[in-house]
Image (cartoon, rainbow, N blue to C red; front, top):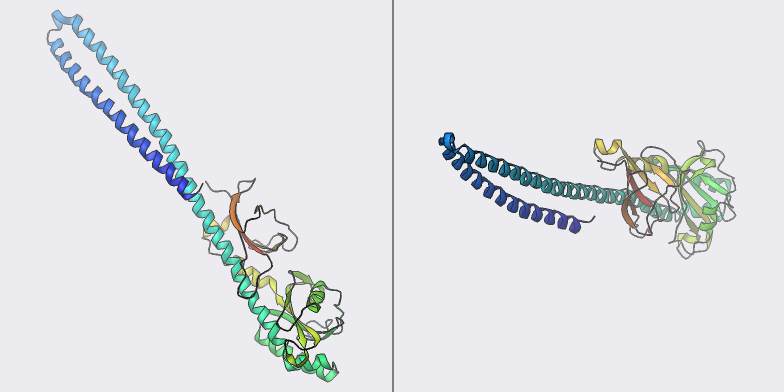
Length: 346
């Protein structure tokens, strides 16, 4: 129920109450006046009870009849009030639920926007570092000396950018020439990743201004850590239109960054207890969850009906609010969604 519909219910109920109360109050006032007259007559008849007993009995009976009518009107008034109070209560409850759901839609948008702003910066990083002279030199002539310089340079970058697990410089055949943490990940250099989908996507890039992204996944060469991989092509002279020489891949440390996003959504203590904040990829796979469940394994049954945002109650009475990423700057996003699922509230 939307706000205008709720306003109509509240208005209609108020008018019904006003009309009903006015009608029934008029009836009660009329009855009360008759009761006063009858009471006066009863007093008069009582004064002559000895010889007017029969008349007093008639008055007493009429008083009983009027009392019954008062009870009937009062009962009708109570019924009308109960019905309208129920309608008003339902309308207010619907309005409160709508407000909660709309707030959750906004919070879902905020969550997915925060991660996309973060990932936009990653696309800038990879394109910038791919033009680094040390990367270009190693890609042109991948000697041991050039690789050592590249390893050192990548290590320096990693020391300043703690959101990355590792950075890889690869040749055009898919062999890793250098990485930033050879001591932590000794099996990376010399590994062939040419058949990885993210590498093939990177090989298709048309210029140094372009970048490729990969869905969140577990990377075996990084001890099965969850990563989001971004790539750019290393080109001759570090120019956007230069001849392709290799690929720079940067592996974003996904799990702690994503967890920080979903756990920082502004829910109060009571809401948080019954809520599950998630990020879903374009296939509705859970890639982040405030409760830590289903990561990279669960396909969430999101009923978005093709809409970019909305909310609904599922078959278990839970409120589900969602919003698709709008992207950020030149990063259009990957069709990810922020989702907030909450247990049904009375």
